[in-house]
Image 1 (cartoon, rainbow, N blue to C red):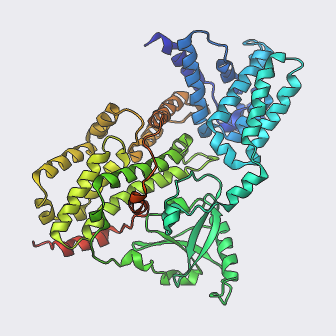
Image 2 (cartoon, rainbow, N blue to C red):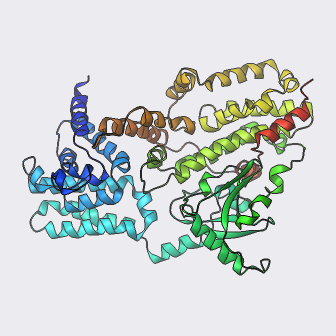
Image 3 (spheres, one colour):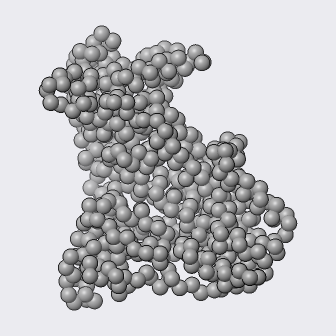
Length: 551
């Protein structure tokens, strides 16, 4: 074991027996007879953590880097075992003076607490800014507490000034709030206007978004809603819109919210949250009365398709590939690194929902179905072979940068409805068949996706990874326990944080120039509003019509 890692390993083992569940950060040890929960009967663990995070210790560079890593571990993973509100409360209390008195003097202890607070603010800055006044209360209160301590501890003056700057950073003026309200940001899958889809993507946080909710006759109302709001709130907005609609003479009674696709329906509960980002590529929301549920039909474009030539024939593979990279990078950059942790540990209470990450995963599915849709809508065999060549060229262009769409294109070509087209594949030149076989080997899941892991290890950041494989954090989550009795498994937290730091390195610099020349605007618009068929049964029927089973 390297000498620089000894403090880390020692600390991890110590904290496995020190960190407690979210409710257990109390001032001392409670007696079992007091009636408290199991977690609340443990010693306050943050008091043991804080001394390791003071900036002045340790002095050696290598050891200091280890302790910075520990602080990063704690900040990235604390939502798993400690709510943000509880962490803020503990930091405002300044830790447990009795426990820490023997380890550092009062000034050092306060600087250590502030160091943890600064790291927390820096890590969650974007998420806190979206929450507005709720989040700004914490740095304000901490600032006031620190100001009161200045007469006793003048060495805190730099920290107080830093806290003042943080209150200004997180404060959102009324003008900024009004400006945000005026922004029209349609939902990812609801792009319909060219000017809307050409706008750079922005992160979905707590702000309002525009979306459509349909009625049984396929008319719709456009509502403005937070992505994280409950189904009951969505239905209240829909009911209000319908009340003033000229096309709705009778005010609807008890409404339910239903997700409708060509494959079926799903009814949401009134308490469900963030339903928008759980929808499939061609899934639409319907509001109806319970008696109308059986009569709901998917939108015509979901069940009817018209054969024809693809627009891809008029676009170069290189430009399509470049626009896919640009859009994927925008989506990937919108994902806050903490969303990866919140997504995997979805069973735990989380203050922030992984909305942007869910949209990236949806994009991956969309690209796969786009490949199959374009090929299966093409009736001409020679043109279908051309499309096959073009998709292999697109994958080849992006292999070194955008592994998300690269593997999505490969998986789309591997779709059973496409792979069964014997005449189409036989018409493909041998060079392209060989190249595609190499791409398939990268997508091979055997030996824990070894081919993919070898490829991504050989690449230098920045790059866009195949996001579904990043979520193999799930296996880490399920293979070892988060809690041992009433204690937090901090060694597991360290492994989770290491995975997040890998993602951070992927985005350490800008991938490519996002400016688009006027001549390529049509390609950009096409890539950002792909028309796809995501019903596998329909795709297979289309495939059998192109090349019947007996051919």
